[in-house]
Length: 295
Image 1 (cartoon, rainbow, N blue to C red):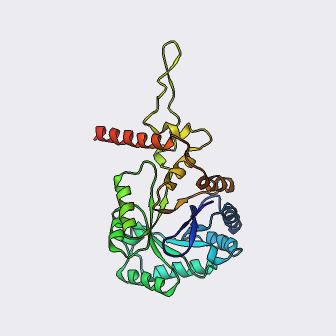
Image 2: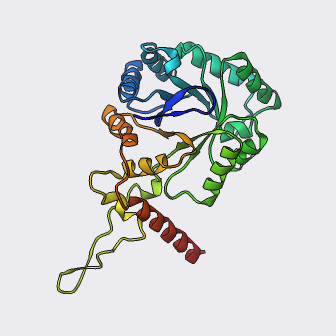
Image 3: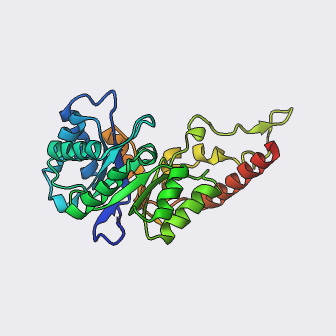
């Protein structure tokens, strides 16, 4: 595992970090404890817990107590449902419950998703600053990629941006990252493997009427290479690509199996194979051209 500075905080975080939230196969604190231990054994020291699951908070908290608190970066995410305002009391109850269940003492980062931010009451915005000033949450962050996130970046009231980024990300996503970086925000990339490519297999080779293979460059300009790069899975290629962006402090993943975490945590120590970077750019250009033709 490699580590990167988390802005000016003085902390170093693992290049691959974990977003933890409810999962059907994680029904006990012991399951979450084992998952957190597995991640730490793979070098992961940055975790973001999504509010709402006491079982998860207790299990992860048990694992984190086995190491020095200063060596772990712990974030707490508050989610909005888009239908009711987010009050200062609601934030207070969530944060204090999270700190109690994890035993963390403080959160390195308090994250609002874009729905929560969009429905913050004025008093809640002030309370966020009070939490930061009081040391219960050392930094404030937002997550998402909608219009509310652009407002957060321009307002300069948040320290951290967590936003989707992958090899299909359009110019707006890249523009948002540039603007956040210019505002000295710490940036974490999420969802590095685009769902649109998850079920695509390799491009089949075309053959002539005589059965001979033709068009040796079949698939060039597409994302077929994701499934054809020897020794690499599509997920690993996508993570390695995201890691080439110097603005990112970490690449945030969701994984619930120890062997998956161990495999993906090894990606920062690997270099993209020769030619893959060029294939990515050709595929992006091809996708953009296709989008223009459809428009």
